[in-house]
Length: 194
Image (cartoon, rainbow, N blue to C red; front, top):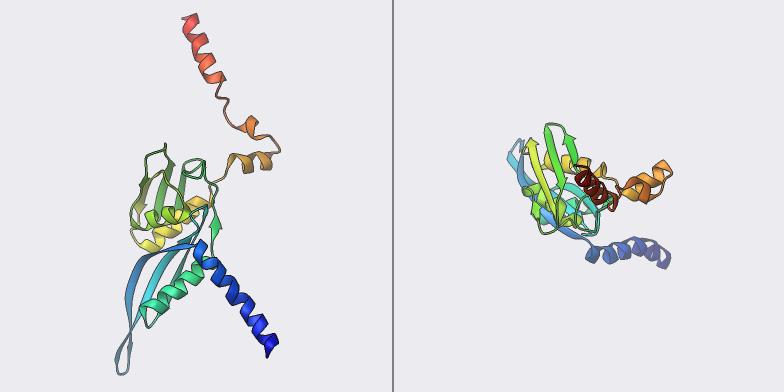
């Protein structure tokens, strides 16, 4: 008996420890009905975005007869499907990206400090849970929250940091990034020649 408690307790304890580090956001809740012989049976479908606000995010959907149970199922699924996204200075994207899923298309652009999150509904939830503070984004096409979130995550998975690109190409980070000191020097030489 004690042995079974140890096995079962190990997984539950881990979930309890993880819960505080993740924030979750309920994006959409739908009432769905199933027509049966005696009438209609109502249930609820929940769409939840979960993240640690430090570069990890995931989404999940859950269905149940009651709203709290649907949200719990969606949250558990979101925690299992989390992805890691590299952020520049912990506040914005490294480069502009496009994401697609079905008819949903999104454009996400890096932004200077102080811009804030310029995004609509479901995309805003993803950025807030991810920990992005400055981003400009636009949803083109499908306004369905499921498609918008999937398109956003598709774009975020294409995001890569200079460090990962340098590692993949076998170079140093300094070789990949543009030189900041040379740009002003070149412009002054051009001005002197003119």
